[in-house]
Image (cartoon, rainbow over all chains, first blue to last red; front, side):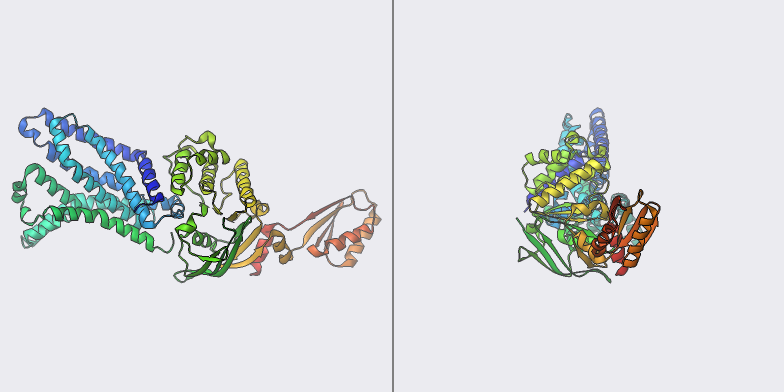
Length: 263
Length: 305
């Protein structure tokens, strides 16, 4: 249960993040790109307009993790460098509660940032349909990366290290992870089972998001064509995976902060 | 309101390093205490222990004679000004104080009163990025006093403050003492803080080296006071006689500097010296007694340890 300090911190984090110029820049960029995808879908032939949804998925799977990592990478280490972490923890609040409040507050800011992009599509019926299907999982994707960013922020001692690390994590999970799996398939010459590959794909939040969205927009047959269908989990497992990505890094972050002898 | 706080058997190790070694420390209602010591003496660690930011290996905490833990309930009684604090630059001073007011469960109306108290009413809506260093420090002080805590913990409170800011700080310390609350301040600025505190605690290598009022520390340090006699218009023969009498007395180091006689004596010998000069009426036209600065006392304490 969130106490008085935790509730205040949620509001504070939300207000502070929505005033961060980098977050604003990235949000506007996302909004413009989303808008461009929507406009292209509207102006194109019927066949092409069906690509609006998948195009938005690709865009979101690239940009949302970046926005989330930018939003969260300084959550703890930034406070430490500004000498405000001690002040924050001198308030009557638990350390895990601080981490959770930061996750929620920054998650709300992320929702606003994504909402800005989404608002650009509302006027387009096809875009609106795609938007409705996109909203939940996209927010989950963002929250998962927020949680990862928080963990990085707790693990590092300097903000510059955290910044570098989130870039590495973003490239790793969003770009190189899939390439690595492809490499694994090539090297093993098909020796790695389809089910294992499917689990490895969805073991990455970006992969889980893409698969879930492909399933929603293009149908299960597309996944079968890609050889992923056989190992895809049911809805419960999918939500559990999302839950895991959301909760585990945040809990680890809270545990690490709580275990520290000195702040 | 908490009237007394004491910590005993306080030991903190960071790996092989002993940051605080079986320390005993007490604070009394209505008193301001200054923590001084070289870097690594344990000042910051002691403050962090009080704030619950460092977990001690062993310690006994007592408030008003009852054992307590450094928990959330304890933290309700503390206000903290960190050293060189740099608040988020995206918010205004008022927004920042409103956050801490919500977090501390303080009435929103108190925010404007505190802004007035720290002299930042004119800048309340301005983003903190536009604040000078001194204004940020004053804002930090505002955060610390927002909930009118029983114990005010100040880490290097004078850093970056201009004369106006220092005035605010002194008045806050005086207000806390007058209200029967407690203040503890860690500082390297002995000369500036000396007259604003009741007790001085000198730390070294995780232990309390000396503790007492500034006068007690001076007395215990046995550092000579400098007494200067102005003898400008007196006949040279009379001056010579006075010097000879002082030399014969033999308890101070006497030096003649033009129209001035300078004697370095222990604090307990000053009265005797005055009696000697009283035996030579008309010779001395002016008198100045310089007590050693606290910096000198501090250096001697650390040198002797």
